[in-house]
Length: 146
Image 1 (cartoon, rainbow, N blue to C red):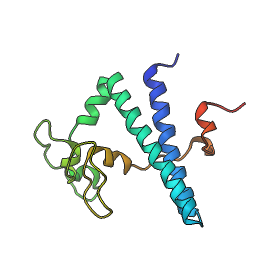
Image 2: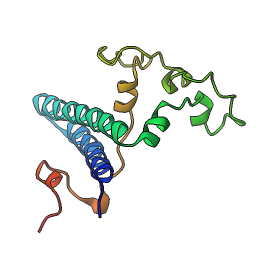
Image 3: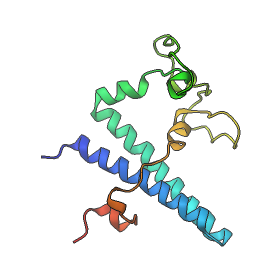
Image 4: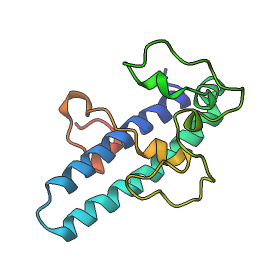
């Protein structure tokens, strides 16, 4: 039987897929107004990802601990060799990766600037490809097609 945590993770996965799909549509759009429309849709989905992540953190304390865990910048660099020592307990992962961390309500940093807060780091995370090559639409979020 499926749990609430599993259902929230499914929503999170689908929202990430949908962001990637909308961003791909924007990149392929010939008309600027359509490009802006698709990017607007992607931004709305990013808000859903943030909301689903918050719900998941409330439902799964183990997941919450993982999201709080600090990772040094070298953790993400395959060429860095041995991992740097862990930071002091409580140091945000974004700060360890060289990002400055600010309040969640802060506007995103301009391109080329450091990520200003954890929500931006989440937005910068690419979504995995859709399972089974599914085409993503609002209707596809409602469940399997008959």
